[in-house]
Image 1 (cartoon, rainbow, N blue to C red):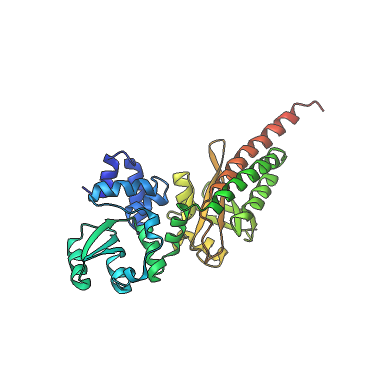
Image 2: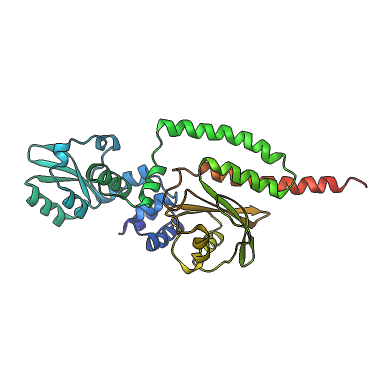
Length: 326
C-alpha cells in the first residue's frame, strides 16, 4: 500500500486532500508528506508518528539531531549523504545510526555498510527535516520552497512572542476597519498592514474573465489588466476559492503578472477577497523576487478576513444613511 493511501485509511487525511497533494506534487515535486504539510492538511509530528508505524522503523526526536558530533558526521561524506539522502547522528561500537527517507532501502543500507565498515541502523525522517539537516551539517543547499515550508513548522520563543504581538496589533487594526466609510479605505488599510510581513503587496479587482489593478504597495498596478487563463495563479485561487502559497510558476497564464513584477518570485501568496459569497478581489504579497515570505501568513489571512467584514460595514453604513429623509 502506498503511503498516501495508508494515510487515508488511517483517517489522517481525506481522499480529497490526498488528491490535491498529489496534484501539487506533480507541479512542485517533493515527497507526498512534504506537500501535505505544506497544504496544512497534516502536522509534521503526526506524519512522523505515522511513518514509524508505516515503515516499522523508529524515529528520532528533533533535539537529538540538533548538535551532532562532527566526528560522527565524518563517517559519511557529503557526496554519499546527498546521494542516499541520509545523515548519521550516533555511533556505538560497530553500529552507525542514520536518519533517512526510506529505511526499507536495504540495498542502500548494505552499500553504506560496505563503504563505512559500520552496521547501519536506520531511522525514518520527513523530507523537510532531512533537507534541513543536510543543509546544516553538509552545506547541501535547499530550495527556497523547502526553507519556507520548514520555517512554518518551527516556532521559536521569539516567533511565539511575535505571534502575540500581531494578535494585539490585529485588535487595533480591527478598530480601523470598523470605522471606514468607503471601499478604498478598506484597501488602504489592508495594504498598509501587510507591510509588517511582506515588502510588496497589491490588490487586484476580479471581473468575470479579467483581473485589473486596484491598488499596490511596492508594485505599480495602475492600468494593469490581465485575462484569467487556465494554469494562471488567478485561476488556481479562484477555482479552489483558497489561498495559493509558493513560487510564481513560469506558465503562459502568469506571463503578464511576471512582467509586472519584473521576474517570477520564488515565494509569493495570493488570497481571495470574498464579499457576499463572490470573489471580488485578490490580495497578492511577496518579499521580492529572491526572498521567501515570513514563516506564517496568519496575520495576512486575518487582515483579509477583517477586510471582508469591513466591506459589509461600508454597505450597511450606506444603507443606514439612505433611510434618512432629505
